[in-house]
Image (cartoon, rainbow, N blue to C red; front, side):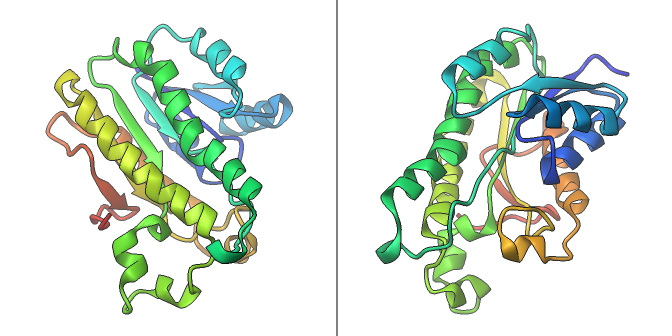
Length: 238
């Protein structure tokens, strides 16, 4: 066990759980963020080692404040919690669905990050990793050679929320660069999770994506900041 501490939001399942497990394997104390306490406890038991439960709803200001008050110092924050409400294209989208999506995928990330900034600033090497999506790349979405064009603008709420998250990642990195922060976004690829039906039927290993997130979480001081990277380390266009 080393003296570094990490928090992973939405870590009771899927990619987040594997990120927590891999960080724990590196000897870190890892706080497993979970809205549901019982599911979080089960995940902590399964991860073992330095895993600790952190009941945290990224859409609830009181929950965020309570969680932030527990940590005096934080070295790594992985904003993994995310939702996909529906797959509708923009002309058919429900406005409330857009709001719910952005509350978790964008506003929740901003709220959690800002709440934990005092603890992160006490770290000698603070790192923030935002779990985004390749579908949030406007460059890829507009490229006829890329698969996303075939979706004809579906998943507008989710995809645009990840585009917004990418922008937030860049602006946060720029604002905190002088303090030694490394802030980057990860495109995990299609993974076997409960994000949607297509993901649930995928054979993509969540642990493979988690390994990419961990690489960004453990970047050396010479590592990049303000970048968008695929799970295999290659840059993704904005």
